[in-house]
Length: 395
Image (cartoon, rainbow, N blue to C red):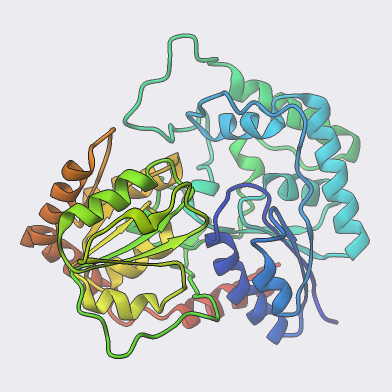
């Protein structure tokens, strides 16, 4: 009998989720499973639809959001997403439960989808998490900070985690769902696949039951291989909608070194006004491994896919994070000595100086090369195969 799987993505933005979901879902389908994807963003999920998967909107909260809250831990991420109101939690669980039942799913896979995990618990079907360390809180309480360089404000609610835990317990009560000792335990399924190298996990010490499968990344089908290979010192991969984009792209122009910048999304200003003969800007997808083989330094916001590929290529990183998840990855890169974060409201010239220093200092390159040597032969296809084997055997 073929498995019926609901693959859920509820929280978090960016194409990284889709680029991770797609190869795993394809491998599950190749093994005879029927896979439906519940996606946070249907536009971003077009590669999944194009690959022949049924894609439906992921149930998520649209009311009761608390976007003004600066989240300092996983519980507060949930509160930002609307989990701070008990009635919202109950409604969300009911929606996920309804979707799971309508598909007759016997396995729910969550890629940053806490509501889907709660829905699976309410139905009583198997669940697993597949994603980054940021999306999987370690069991126990209190939950660790996702902003280790910042101190919460004095008036920061200290009982918020207990409140969310109580609300979740109350929302699950009508379904006689299995209890949990703390909030994080609702999202640790015992079948958790961390798609990250251990050295890059946001949580530096985890308990048992977590498998460091390794990063899963794929490139858009339209990625182009440039021939001849470019002669570049700097490869940048930036989000045109990021708050830091204008100063970052101007910093790359001021660097005055051969640079290729891939810009995804729509910039808020015309990049054509950036006049620098050393800087080539493109919005077309490119073959990232080819670019990294040519570069001496990679510049990005800290997405785990690009960071992993750069380190596997032995290329140090200059990271300008736009959110706590990217900042956490940046901290791990700094701990490795394989790059630096570019923090603060720096002017373009200062940004150029920082990127230049990272690319020119041999210590950064040596640390990145050491990382690459530890993971020589890493194969994404083998990682995907292992994840699928465990998902189908353990659930």
